[in-house]
Amino acid sequence: MKSKMVLILSLVMGIITTMLFFQYMKQMNTAKVTTVEMVDVVVAKEKIETNEKISSEKLEIVQIPKKGILPQMIKSVADVEGKLATAMIEKGEPILTHRLGSEKEEGVYVSRKVREGYRAISIGVNINQSVSNLIEPEDEVDVVVTKLIKDAANQNIAVSNILLKKARVLAVGRKMQTPEDTKEPYVEYSSVTIEIKPEDAINLVNATEEGKVHFILHKRPIVTEESKINQNQ
Image (cartoon, rainbow, N blue to C red; front, side, top):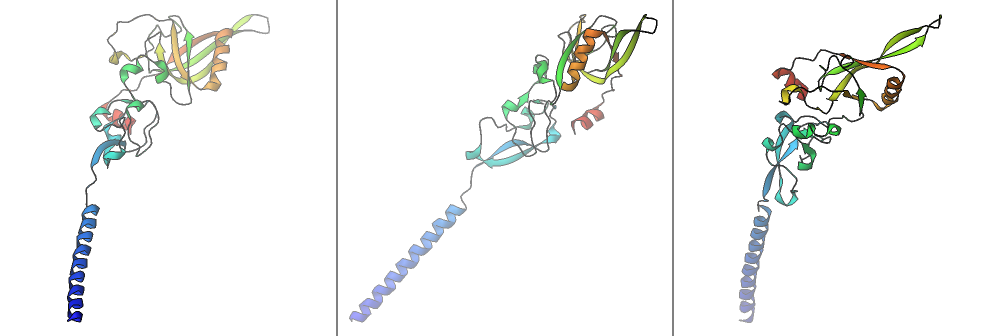
């Protein structure tokens, strides 16, 4: 009788243990399949350079856990496309609001236009030196320096040399945007700001003190939709 009671109790305890085990496993499986809430964020599909105008081709949407999102992360490609990168953005890096600038800002801060490794310097010019004030921002110019030297007869002769080739124009006077980007009326200017390497700055400053500087204007490339795409790639 006692042994039968022990057997029954053993069976009951076994059933209870089995039920508890299966209940525990069910809870574990439920915990494993619990969905982590994900959020869309915009990341760089490929490397984006400083001051580059960002195209949609260089962006993609990825999902990250909501717990890992930062307030500065952007969730829509439309909020990034057409903006300017204020710093280099590596491939796969989330796009943050403080890494973006606008074309409007480019027209206010010339320092935002200067590329990495370059410096901005302004040169005083008159009508003739500036190609009749026809030089515009984003043009390319050669910088010619003319000095007076003595010849064998102790006569002054002018000697001209090209000091810089294809220097990028950042601004003319205080104008920093191209004519197609602004509706401002034409205003004469007396200075041209160009972008040069730091090692060229001293030579240019010395040249302006020792002689006269003239700018030679290069042909501006014709911008087409295809060239815009290639430029952004």
